[in-house]
Image 1: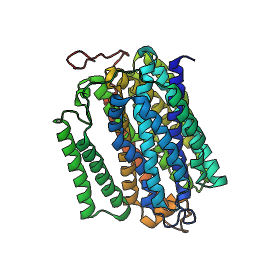
Image 2: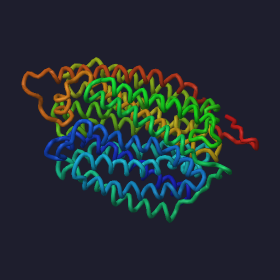
Image 3: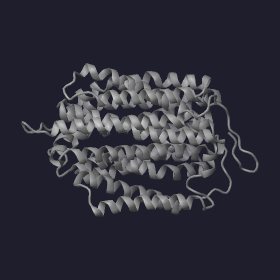
Image 4: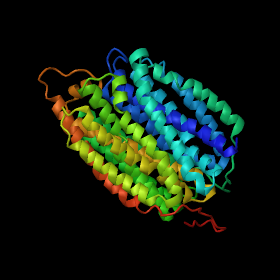
Length: 483
């Protein structure tokens, strides 16, 4: 087997596992929140079972990307598989919601080690004319993991309990860790004189954490002066982070990358797309299990049209982007996503499931058209020595977008639906007879979909600036970027 296909196979396992775990937890969350499963677990715990994982990933991706550029991407990638596997085992024995949140943080570190180096290792191994196809295949694996996470997670949760969803990471995690250690090698050049940025890391991670704490606490317990201060403090800290990054010698985010138009456009489109789309499956999971009272398995099966459409279009769009460039694909994908979200925002509570199939397919097609071409555009736009940082920036912005998407979603629901009713809906418990909570929940869903549509249209603007043809970017002796 040619080395590039060894790389593709191993990194594909990494993409598969990370997406599998994300959707397995998502589909199983209503079960976890039942009083009989994790005693004392609240809606706030449930939010952070999802958000804690993403927060750790978002706040460590850039540092790990820099470490990968300095010390070797493969070394950190291998370690990531081991950490992720150990974290999965610890999640499966969680006695309460608090312990599970902390073990999800361990998983998040492992995921960051994998994701921050995945695309860079893949990009190093493939020539520029094949990267879109390779990244598309990698994307298929991620979406295939999403499909199995939805269906397999529902199946395992229904038959064996939610703890079983973490067991299935163990065997592939061990195999991939050993295989990566034995077969993968670093091909990309390493920059000279690079340093870490500990102050930038503290400001970025701390600011994001404080802002999201204020936002989620406000969503659950209501808006108040002290929570507003948390949010303002988080934003001020993030502003200070931006100020520091423009002045330190080795910043956490290399601002020179944003001088490349294709990179800046692709990164911004990635952020906006993540904010607009990351809550989509979670909304439908709560709707199917909390409003229509389907089981976890049934809910996973009902989400298949979305996932299958994504899986079919993803590799095709990656293949096409190698030939016609990413611009038309990414732009149309976001416009199509906006149309699908507007479709969802008009549907009444009692609509037949068959009516939901078309907008789910449109959402999957829109996402499939966007992601592989956009990743290829980002990775092709930067010099080889900076691909680890570029991959880390791209993945960080996507993770930050996911966090903001979840925070905005829970803020909308928390403002619209009483906390007790929200707890019942999130746990899949039937509301009392005559309760108005279902109507309020559906109204909140409609508002969330309108917000998602607007953000998708905004994402189409930078997506239209990502470049029309794939090309290699070089770095000159004076370290300035071209593109």
